Length: 96
Image 1 (cartoon, rainbow, N blue to C red):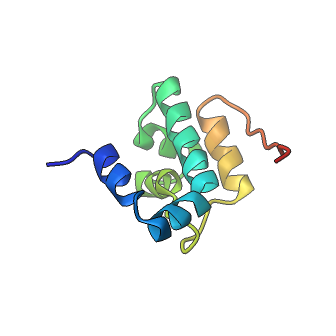
Image 2 (cartoon, rainbow, N blue to C red):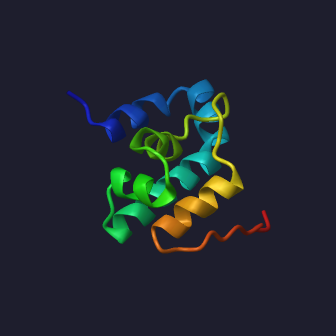
Image 3 (tube, rainbow, N blue to C red):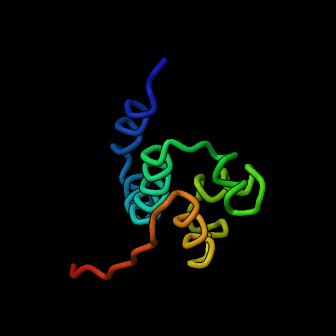
């Protein structure tokens, strides 16, 4: 069985897939950062949910993202998540 990275490498050979994948790069980066921050904080989704005053499935949805066809978390939600893991939300615009 192929690993996730091996499957993605195979799919990236298809230009249409690559274009769609590249179009979601910023969203993938955001959700990767969310998960890395939680792991650095040493917290579970359930612990973050408790701190945010919500339930673990809501935190799972925040971390899963889902691409442009799904609802992305609001800045207010991201701010609450950041506070729950002992961080502050920082948003920047970077030149191309």
